[in-house]
Length: 307
Image (tube, rainbow, N blue to C red; front, top):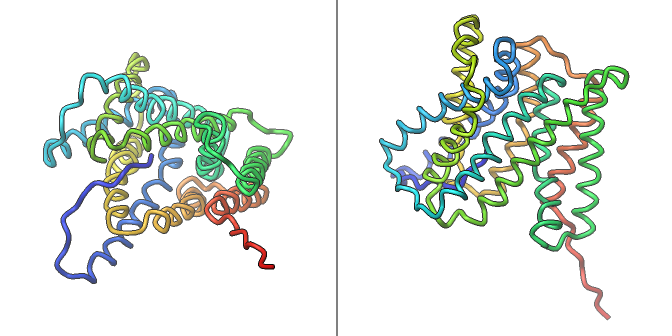
C-alpha cells in the first residue's frame, strides 16, 4: 500500500538523513517483500478473508497508537463515504483478492504480479479519468500484461496453471483504483491521517469474515500466529511510516525505483523461508513486467526537426 508524505522534523546533521533514507528504504523493501511469505504462512491456518481481517486488526491497533502519539484530525462527515471507498479498494478488496490469489501461485510470483499496479493505473487514466495516454505507454502496458501472463502460466507450468493467480492482478487493479482516488483527494488530509482512516475503514468492512476467526487463531500454531503478527505490524503499519519518511526526504520518482527490488527480494526470502524455487518462466515474466513498469517512467523525448 502506498501513502502520501507525512511531515517530519529536519535533522541538524545534513549527512545523517541520507543514511537514514537508505536504511528506511531497505526496511520498506524487506517488509513488503515479506508480505507474500507471511500470507503464505498465514493461509496454513486461516481462510483468506479471516487472514485479511486479523492482519488489519493488528495494523489498526498499531496505527491507533501512532495516531494518538502524533495527533490526527477528526474526519469530516461528508468525507466518510470517500474514506469507506478508499478503505474498500486499498484494504478490503485488495487483500481479499491477494489472499485468495496466493492459494494458486507461489509467493515469488505473487510479488511480481503485485508490481503491475502502474499498468492498471495507466489504463484507468485513459478509460476512466480521460487522460491522454501515448503510444509508448500503450506499448509498455501491453508488454507488462504479456509478462504477467508469462508469470501466471509459468509458475506451475501450463498444464497445472491455476486461474486464481489472476486474482493477484485484481488486487493490483484494486490498488491502482485506490491510488488514483487518493491522489485526487490527498489535499483533504495529511498523509498519516489519510492512511489511518483508510486502514480503519477497510478493516471495518472486513468484519464480515469475523465468524470463526477466534477458533482459527486458537487452532493455529505459534509460528503461524507469529508470522501473522509480523504481517500486521511490519508490512501493514511500520512500512507505511518508513515509506512516508523516505518520500519526505528524497525525490518521489527516484525513491519509487527502489520498490522494483521487492520481487527479487521476495523470491530470495521465499527460497530461504518456504524453500520455493522460482520457475524459469516466472523469472522471465518478472523481467518483462518490471522492465515494462520501469519503462512507463522513461518515455522517449521527441526531437523536433530543424530545417
